[in-house]
Image 1 (cartoon, rainbow, N blue to C red):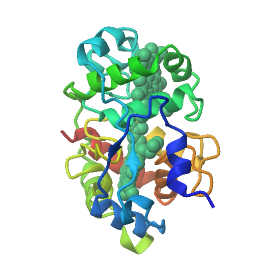
Image 2 (image 1 turned 180 degrees about the vertical axis):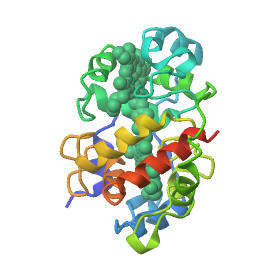
Image 3 (image 1 turned 60 degrees about the horizontal axis):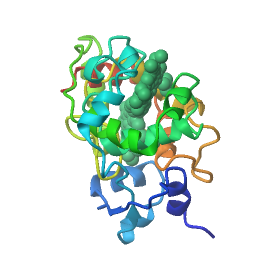
Length: 243
Ligand code: HEC
Ligand code: HEC
């Protein structure tokens, strides 16, 4: 039987074989257990993983991102609420997502041609460039964010919903080593759309614990299915206001 982590790494594997070691964050492990997923291999022993952006250069990324700014805004601070903010997003996650768009694994007709224009080196450069930018953004909706904060910080153990905080961090900066994305300052409308797409399976073609198509995507598919529309609205409002 091939090990799940090997299968997961396949989607993003790079030709040049750049690799690093990644620690297993305990909080994230507890969250995995809460949603009934078994601990991945790195829980038992450190496994090789990729820090694919390792040789990325901020200045080269800034130049290459000119075309991206049309939608993602200057320095990755977009104004359209369905075009995600990229400023301050972690480079591991950005790199992986660009490779997944390019491979057609993350379904998006707008981003696929954009990513296809980029070489692996461009992707590395762009990823470190956006990581180095400061996220600016909108406020949280005062009617919703408090309930959203409770869900973010504690989840709902009675319904097996893990705390978002365990993986996305106490202030929403994500987890670089594991490639868990930052959520702080992300547009609420984009967050709502992504949670709906994880739940419906629209974000990835055929992803699931048995057939993972992105290294981490199946985690959110499981979690998003447990959330009500109100919870999605509330937590999306909360993260939009996080800095
Ligand atoms: C025509 C508008 C447009 C342009 C130009 C564009 N993007 Fe996007 N991008 C989008 C949209 C829309 C999404 C959200 C897709 C979805 O709903 O899943 C997105 C998503 C992304 C994501 C995923 C973010 C996340 O949080 O998961 C990354 C990374 C990204 N774009 C990078 C880029 C880069 C790099 C460029 C330039 C080479 C670029 N984009 C150009 C519209 C655009
Ligand atoms: C076990 C770890 C874990 C937990 C707990 C978790 N997430 Fe995630 N989340 C991830 C990972 C990993 C991704 C990236 C998945 C991928 O590769 O597409 C992600 C992606 C997301 C995205 C898409 C980000 C983007 O830029 O497109 C949103 C929104 C999100 N999570 C919200 C939540 C919310 C809300 C909760 C709590 C109810 C939560 N997550 C709990 C690991 C987790």
